[in-house]
Image 1 (cartoon, rainbow, N blue to C red):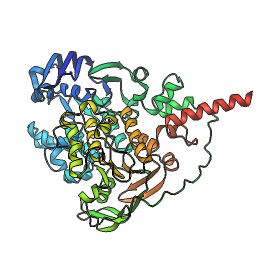
Image 2 (image 1 turned 120 degrees about the horizontal axis):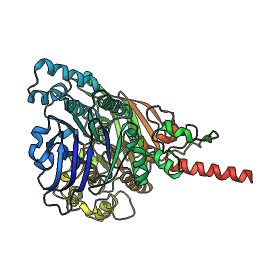
Image 3 (image 1 turned 180 degrees about the horizontal axis):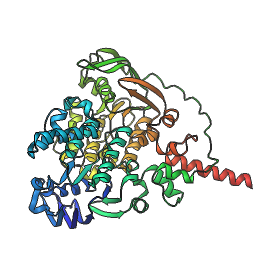
Image 4 (image 1 turned 180 degrees about the vertical axis):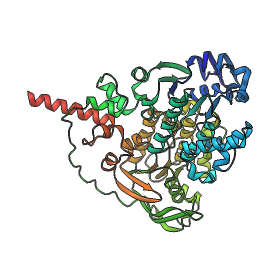
Length: 552
């Protein structure tokens, strides 16, 4: 279905190729996972499959690309769209209409599909992605995860022979992500649909795929069945279970918790009850009794939440449960019908967004909402100018000046300081937006899906930055569906369902007991109290050491 030979491609005015000597063959009916660091060239390669690269993007290209028997350079997107369904990394940019059902029908209308068949296909797509109840909703009222499912449904309605999906689960809660992946598996197994999938959260996908292709700097470095590919990849780019298996030399390498249970010792330790952590000082943020509705639809119902200095709080819940709406209320973008919000001891109910954002870093779900400068460095400079601050300023009681160039280096963006932000990958744009809102050294961070589009190593670099600022007294409220991230960074977890807080507790107490949000390691060692691969590795080695000394 896809045959690529010695493909090299460079974007206009770029010195370094985004793809370099790529050779790849994908047969009909294969389910292929494409992985690699942010900016490795994965999305560019996907765009070659339907001709967007180079017909839309321009640039220089060498080599041969054949898709469904068509030469991509000769055929172009108009022809290839009949064979390749494409779901972009940012579904917000893919929508053509403003309502769910017409959006799914739009491509069918352009393809002159008869009305009777069109209705059938739209209904199939709605049911497959669990969107029937949203069919009349405006797209602007949907959560990021719901919009992602709409984009997938619109691509499937055309019944393509190849489905190319760029990070389909990046904004989905664990259950919704599983539903989408199961739908893709059914399409692959029952209809023989060829699927090429880009995903950073490999733990969600590995069990389903036939092959794993790993890229770095525009080159394919690994192309093998999943188990063999993971063993050849950098360990820091693998899921927690795989990292643990590699460190302990588990053979065969487990891809799922079920496979990992073969290696769990019968005498796995039981965690002792942890001492109750001392309460933090006066909260940086305290919200009480928040209520908000979109029209007649209640979204937040009597919500109480607080974040203390130096504390990281993860806000979790299903798509559409009210998480993003809550953040918008906290930062002043939405006005709650009831309730009180106190920031640093001050009631901010009547403060403007600009006044609030002098103390709060707010990162929305879509990073493009914050990007409008000509270069990455200028994005940070604009924020400083808007707040009347100079580079190297001291704000918020922090002890050291904060230099924009230092922040760019910490975010892995130093080499992209002169790049146009909207030309970057979603993961890179996410980091630019994060830099733009945090260059003021705020005391409180409100982050909505901040690791969207980021690989494992990039997440570790972000965690290091967050921990550094926590140590200086900053508070973090993080909205995320990434349970492995929460296991590493959060002191406390708050779970929201249908606009109500249903759980609030220490991460080590709450996550392992949740069937939906438990991380891989706590599922593997359910009574140990371990949440991360590093904790499990240290605990297992300590157990072996104690056993050896007892025998001695």
